[in-house]
Every structure is written in C-alpha cells, then in structure tokens.
Image (tube, one colour):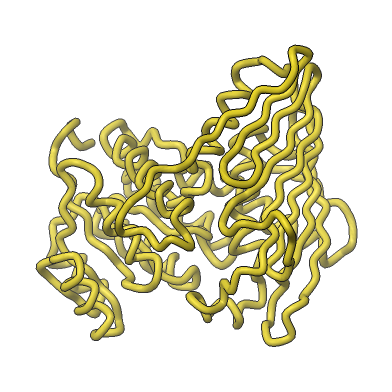
Length: 348
C-alpha cells in the first residue's frame, strides 16, 4: 500500500485518442509523475511523449514493465487488448487501472479480476461517467431524502454527434453502443439506484456503414423496486441534445428530480420546484466537444489514487465493474432472445 502524499509514478499503455486527456488529467493531481508511455505505433508514442514531456517511450509493453518502476500502469487501449495487458501487469505485481469497457467478454473480465486478486494487487476500472459533477449532485439529492424513495427513472443519451470521426474503430465493432456507451449508463444506474434484478433490451442499427447496433433501449428492474429505462442512441437528432450530456428524470414518493440540458437540476416536491445549475470544472487541455466527460476524468483519477493509498478502496474496482459487465452481457442476451434476462449473480 502506498503512503498518503507519496509521489505516484504512472506508466501509460496506449497513446490513442483518450490518452490525450487521461494523461493531463493525471497531471492535474499533486505529486503525480508520468514515467513512460507505450504504443505499438512508434510515431504516436513519440508524439504523446513530446506533448506531455514524458521522458521514456516504448513500443512493447513487456519492455516497459520490465524496465520501469511504476506504482501503477494505466491501460488506455482497445478492449481486445485489456486482458493480456492486465495479466502482464499482474505478473510484475504492478497495480493496474484499465479503461472501460473492462474487456471484450465477461469471461476475460472475470479472469482479469482473479489474476490481480491472486497477485495481491489493486485492480481498478477507469469508469469516469459517475464522476461528472451534475451526476454527483443528482446522487446528493437522492441521498438527502428530500423527495423520498425513487420508484421510476429514465436515463437518456441520444445524439447525432459524429462519434465515429474521432473513434473510427467503433464502426467495426459487432457490439457497439451497449458495450461502448451502455457501460457508462448502466454503471450510472447502479451508482444511483443499486443492483439490478433483471434486464430487458431492444437494439437497432440505423447508420448503414457500421457493423454493430447504434440504438438501444434497456429496461432495468433494480433491487430496490425501481424501474429504470436507459435510452441510448448515436443516430438521434433532437431539440434538446447536447453532446455529451446525459439527461435524467427520477420520480419518487414525495416528488421528482430532473437533470436536463446545460447541467440544470430541477427538484420538485410539495413545496414547489427549485432549480440549480452544476457546470463541470473547465480544463485548458479538454476538447470542448467532450469537456463534460473529460473533466470527470480528474475526479475519477483522484478516487483511484486514494484507492491505491487505502488498500484498494475506490469506487470502480474490477470486482465492482464486473457487475456492470454482467448488465452489458445480459442486455445483449435479452436483445438476442427477445425476452427478459434475470441477473442471478453479483460479480465474481
């Protein structure tokens, strides 16, 4: 276990689109140093190192793990590489943070958790959606008890933003929006309402030049008797859309709460409606089109660093994220069989 306040030495595996924001998000925290970067694409790795003044560059993850004395390795690569890289880090007894989705399939995800547990190292998943400031404030409203026990909710992320432009690999995925975006929304549902008992999912493909689904409707029955509808779309043009904002409407025994466009939260009770706005922090390195999401990376990193210093006690551990992966798998199974899927297990 690391000591509080001790310098954190981070090694980066993967220099693609999201590394351009995860690296500076690390550097927003005090006493953090990026030791090295690694990417099989030499030009991309060199460019990333120059951009963030990182001293060493590797093109083979095995070489980096053998040569560097990192306190944690941050894996920012495509899901199909996650298992092997996590196993590599575990073989060096190096704590590991892995980008979402945790893995390409549930079996690999379970193995990653097991390998890190056997090695005695912390294993975290970089699930930053729940760390968006408006969503944290929404959680505070629910925990205050002001509107009572929730019984129904809707979570909406429907956009026409060209997500395939910055991440063209998404076009080639057989499992697209539920695996890519659904992991975020399903994790947010768990964060707000607890664990799910059942899942019913419908999917569709609207863009003609992609392999996977770009529209999904997921109905969850949560353990506290709450019905939650998650609506996901990369193919919707609406009056209220503002990428990458997620909208929430939650009904409860004594009122309701809504998180709408531009970070406004409206809480309605017998005393009327009060309205407050909770914009995210602004960072100079963030892409304006993704600023809401990218600002949440800082708070996610802050929590993961605390986990490294407190015996792995962070919010988005590998063990915890297995439960989100269960919902992803159950959603695809439900869409395939056209029926409700019960959630029988809870993680590993």
